[in-house]
Length: 458
Image 1 (spheres, rainbow, N blue to C red):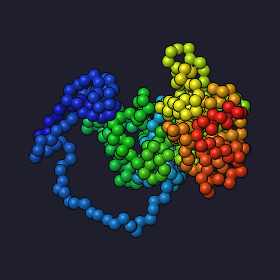
Image 2 (cartoon, helix red, strand yellow):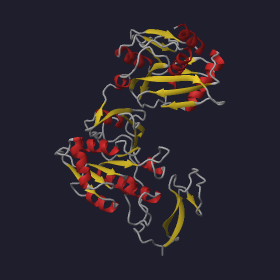
Image 3 (cartoon, rainbow, N blue to C red):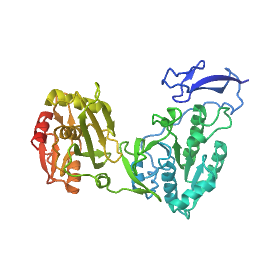
Image 4 (cartoon, helix red, strand yellow):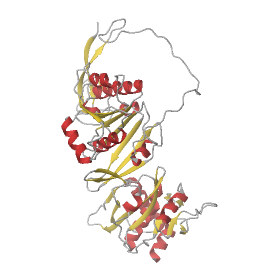
C-alpha cells in the first residue's frame, strides 16, 4: 500500500529539503520553506491513483507530414498578436505574468472578447473574482455584449470536465494559476506542488483538445513568476506585462515563444476604458521631450523587429558624500558603471567624485548594448552643460578600450529616425555598404574621446 510522508519544499524555487529551515540553500529566500504531504508507492505496490499500464513503446514519425500547418487565431489586437508571433496557436499554452494591478486581467478580457465569435467558444475562468466582478470590468471596457462565457472556479478537475466537452471552448483563460488546486493533493492552493500539478493537468487537457490556453501568473517581489521554475518550461510561451504605476504605458514582452520571436514587445496605453494599442511608440515616448536641454540624448533602439526611439536623460551633480551615488531607472546599473569607467579612463572626464543619475523616459526598460553611446552622450552633455542638438539620434556599443562598435539593424534605426524628422545621427564608423540611404547627416564616432570632443565643442 502507498503511505503518506512529508517533505519540505521551497515555495520560491521548488527545491526539496530534508527538514524545515528558515532559509532556502538553493535560492537564498527566507521563510519560503513549507511542509507538503506526498504519497510514496513502494516497489511492486499499488497507489490509490491510476493503475500502472504496460509499456507499449513509442511510435516514431518522419519530420515531413501530410498535415497542413494549423492556422493561428488572431485576436485583432495587433500589439498582442505581434508578441505572440502572429496570433494564438491552437493547442498552445501561454503564461502571462506581471505586477499586481498592472492590467493582466484587463488585457486578457479584451483579448477574449476579440476572439469570441459565433464559430468559436471562448471561456474566461476566474479563481480570484466572482462572475459579477468580471461583468463589471467588461462593462467598463465596453465588451459586455461579446459572447464570452464566464465561470468562477478553482478546482482543476471540474474545469477540465467542462473544457473536455464535445463542444468545449477553443480558447480558455485561467485567472490565475496560483488559485487553482488539484483535490488529490493536500497542500493549499498556490504552493509549489499545487501550481505544478494544476498547470500540468490544464496544459495536458488543452493540448489533447487542441484548445489555446492562457494562464495568468502572479510574480514575486523580485519580478519572477511565482511558483516552481518548471512552470515556465511547461508552457509554450511566456509573456511579461511591464510598466510603471506613474506612467500610462504598458509593455508586453515575450521572453519565451516556441512559435515566434522571443525579443518582441507590444506597447499599450492604459486608459479609462482599457488598454489601447500604440501603433507608433517612438512618437509617444518622445512626445514630452524638451529641446536644447543638457543631459538628454535620443537613442535609436530596436525591440524585436521594431525600431524604437526613446530619450535617455542623465544628470551629473557634485556629490555631497564621500561615496558618489549611481542611480539608474530603465537601464542596467552595471552597464552604467562600465560606461563611467571608460569615460574617465579613455576620455579624461572627471566623474569619480560626482553623483550620476540616468533615466529612460517613458517607463521603457532598455537591454541592448547599443544604448551605450546615447547614455555616454547624455552624461557628457550634462557634465559639460552643452546640449546635444534635438534633431540628433545616437546608437552604438562602447568597448572597454573606448572604441565604439557597430550595432545591428543599422538601416532600420536610421530610417525610423528620419521618419520622425531627425536630421543627424551619432553612430559607429559606417562600414562599406552600410550607409542606409536615410538622408541623415551621419557622424561616425570611433571612440569616446571623439564623442567628448564633439559635445564639448557644441
